[in-house]
Length: 206
View 1 (cartoon, helix red, strand yellow):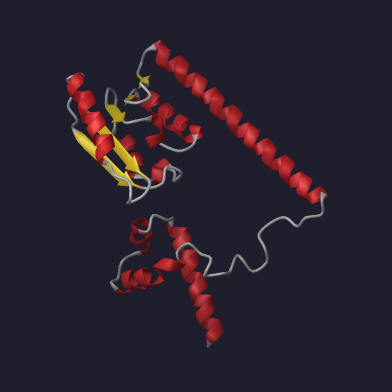
View 2: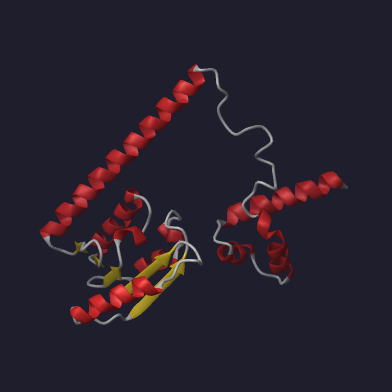
């Protein structure tokens, strides 16, 4: 099976350019797309919580995933490497149009995947080291670390605050928390915490 994957991070962006590139590539290489996956979601969101994750679970040996470029799979190199590693284990293929990347079962793909994995590991270690050094420096300067007092319980600063009316409408319709969280592109626990903050405010106002 050949799958075309398209991702944009906001409603203002269009999927048509990516679809056109994939379709034109298929025409040149005599390929047929058996299924399309399109989603509007940030590439920083874990792939397992996206349509991409569900697609990867369905894919099996010999299947091909086509996308415009590697960045469509995820924003971080580490996340992209996880996806490539998963496809290698399942013996699936990933081809990108702009990057010209080909993940298959040949030795060149495996060497390139190893290089990516090594780069991702180095990047993760460097970020961790920089974070520790920055925290140590702030502590030495006498700065207080952690979340500012009161910010944790601030409803107005919560990213779901702007969707309060919509959330209440969904709840009145009897929709489950999981479905509401999915429609708002957040984790179920994030929604639960926000609802808990609302309840706390109601109790304080009584």
